[in-house]
Image (cartoon, rainbow, N blue to C red; front, side, top):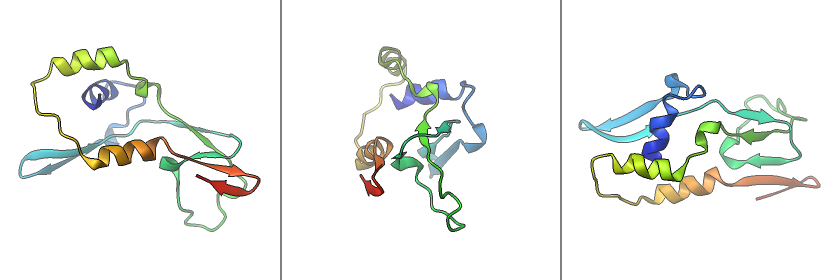
Length: 119
């Protein structure tokens, strides 16, 4: 569904065009990364692994609690995505291990449990 997500993301109000990067090698596109606006709201100790940060100033984030809320553009209609994909030139679909790694990272959370962090 990535083709469709890219298609709808670029026209969405949350899309950040300055953070849309394409990687080429020998004139061929080999990678792309895009970003949308999202929200961090106060919550009770559940942190998305994909949003983990390293403090550059010790304890600057101490006492803060957030949870990630993705942009509504990420709510993809699978039927619309399939129809869009069917309209594209047919290409061999390939599997890359990084697809599983991305899925795991984007769906993983670290939760606090009485001061003890758990994954």
